[in-house]
Length: 305
Image (tube, rainbow, N blue to C red; front, side):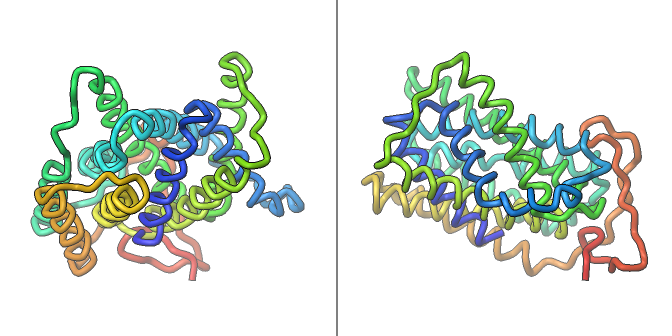
């Protein structure tokens, strides 16, 4: 999850740098198309993309794609660290969704770590929310809520034995189709040759981050992965300071320290036994993990050896 955090920060930086040339719809489309390009070898074996859980993939794509558009909108109109902070309230929503849809029990120490991470987010937020930035701030928070729904479905797909590359490929395919159609009505311009390195870096960092994140949420404990996802805030603040000149203040650095400590603490906490998720939950399309002889139990579900 730490690797995913660094790559997501790089993605956010690329979005900010490209936002002067492309709209949010175009950026989501190009990010998704780049993901398909990097995973194109999978098309050589169409049978490897067959899945019995297409509904969960669809829910994951719709929630994740909408969250991505809102997130890019927030990045475009807010300081990078602020936009990422608002989006990364998603682990807090996971404490609500996880207990209901995944049946996970969070011990009091993990809850304290989550609270410390949330306190860090509050300290990291700077007084930049002027009236003209209220809508981007609301978009950032909404992206966090929708992202947590996407993560729940990622978790369920991992429990069902779906490989990371299939989850990421079908997500990119769903977003490419949806935002490609939207771009037709919204208007789209072909990128100039000079824009390709930035767009390819955006797509590659996002795809690799998705693979790492999908593995973390699919094969680990959701709430622990949520704690570690806070590391993106630190990486984003550093990128904003070094590249964009957005230097965080003392309280912001204190907030980032709390966030990192919360993530480290979550790794050291013992994992309580998970409870099987109730079947038929609408938000996760009711997938129940199916262990078999070739799988081995882990603290977060079923993992391939």
